[in-house]
Amino acid sequence: MGCDNTFATPYLQQPFKYGVDFVMHSTTKFLNGHGTAIGGILLGRDHGFMKGPATKMQRVLGGNSNPFDAFVLVNGLKTLEIRMQRHCENAMQVARFLDGHKSVSKVNYTGLTSHPDHAIAMKQMRHPGQ
Image 1 (spheres, helix red, strand yellow):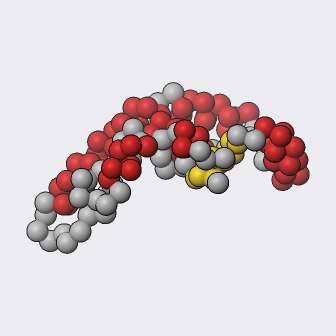
Image 2 (tube, rainbow, N blue to C red):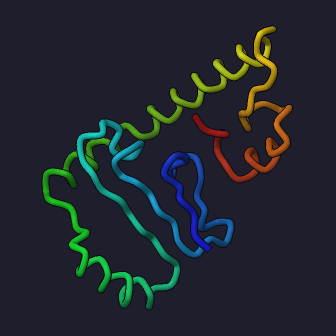
């Protein structure tokens, strides 16, 4: 079973804790933080698969980063925690505002206790997200 953890990031959710076999991240989005480098990460529990077929596929497709993109990603990771905290705080404020607005019939945000998956989100995530 795999999980695309791009929008949750490792800061908000760690899928391996819940039995996921593979985790994917787009490093272009939240991990980088600036959209200045294109990349992705595939992580897996099965070391044999990761060192065998996955590595072969990566080499065939040329999926390794250039040094500058790696540098930019590392710099983005330094501010991941504070950026994700702010995203989440802002998302909660917007959701609460919209939830109380008379012109809005429904807000679909797992951070609100009215959401049917609120308990699951709170159990497996540091915060329901942005």
